[in-house]
Length: 402
Image (cartoon, rainbow, N blue to C red):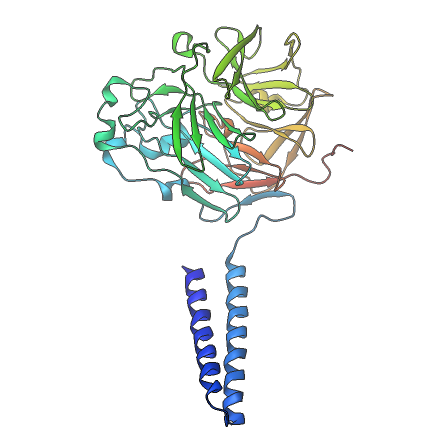
């Protein structure tokens, strides 16, 4: 609205100036006063445009360049929630955050995308995004509702409009950077809580969902494994650990195929978060008092990590955990002001604390709602539906690869 007003004002003076100039063409005997009037109009146009731009620029929030937490004003998800009775469930929109929900980092658009709900908590299947460019929260899609969800009682994979049923998303959301698509492998469908074996792909350009139908796949609907996925940007593939079955998988979107890579003993706990270091080719999972590593490729060797000085992160349920390409380290958040910077070479954490953090983590986990954005060199987190979102810039004292 401010931008519209500024442009409208500038356009008014532009029309005035050119009207004066055109009328002056027919006045070969125009006086110096007339010429001065035109000059004054031009000066007013330029000064008004400049001052408007300065005022508009001043109104824009920016992520500080200094290290530390930054609370983004007016970024509560609650303000973007729809008020539709048919999708409310037991909890309403708060379940988008509170019910084992995750997120993904859209690196092309610098936005943290949130999807959650499911079971009997909330039936809305809309997507939300914290946009780090204008620094605002927005609802990306509209929820299916009313007659479109009249099949809800059957606990469907999809509503009648073809969009996916709401669900808990855990660590099942990934941004496929090589294709500019969103990947979802979720659990706990509305309203029954059944898990699902289905992959959904969302196209953020067309704002459309597509259901995939791979013949071979993990079987969480049969064994209750929660989604534990991570994206390898160098191989353009999603890796997933099926904890209750001890099976490690790789998903190729182009072929719509899950490949069973190995049977391993790792990442078998509930409520863990996973991430990949694409250079070292390691898949890590952490949380619920377990910390494991699986090597990508070869024989998929596993390791139980000691994680020296990482105890708070390891003990957390569904902690925030992502790979920081600028430092070559993983960074974790388990609530409060402190973050854990994990060095895979040393198998240890450095703990950094910055004032003014997001407060206690959701009791049902953070998962992918804590993500790193390399273009901005910041992490972003959305913790609670009625709290502002935060960014985090690490100190320059954190070692960077040479």
